[in-house]
Image 1 (cartoon, one colour):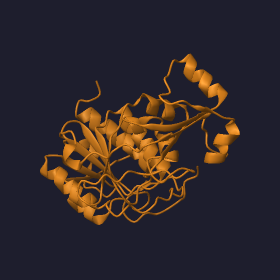
Image 2: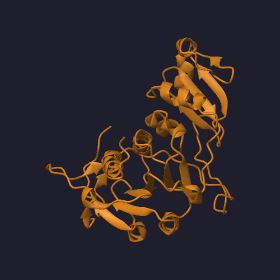
Image 3: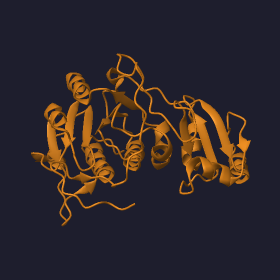
Image 4: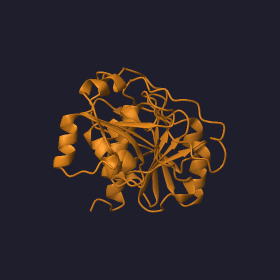
Length: 284
């Protein structure tokens, strides 16, 4: 995957340049209080079906009691491996040739002989966020590879939740789930209709909300960080939106010594998480 050379106006965490997966419009009830607008799958399945493929992604879903598996396609080799590792499938799998899964996903998908159709996981409410540790907030990050990589890093750093917008964000299915390598089952996703309102509520509940932007007043490593901490990452190329910047408690930058001063947003997330976890004493 090749990055495009860009000169973003504000935020310098560049995206991977890949066109985001399209998502259907939210239903008529999506904006109502208390509604759970799941991210939905589309690869040859019903609109509310999540598509999961690949060994780590599917086995993590099988191990998650909160994930309802509707259908499981396996090649003979994949079925044999599951049996050898004593992994329960929870549903009776359909044994198919690899080409059947290729037809569903496309020839470039590395599915390792496994495809599952599942129900989406429920989105927790913003007021249920744990008030300890770190939460990530994604401001309209649209590339599913980037969001998946961020989720994988979030799981590695024991992030309590990821907050994202119901619109202008990729579906928690397909490419994102594969890139997350099982983290979709480990890190709760909180979807909100209005990010600034959600950040305001987090501020009121005692979160230190730190927006990451190369134009920030302070270097993140020099900021006195407190729990609960919310690290806010902006969209590829565009960075943090103006209202998001204004709602954060502080806007900080990531200083780097090399000639290249910009980072892919998923790499920036790893660096910010390492700094945050280290400063908060969460590294062991």
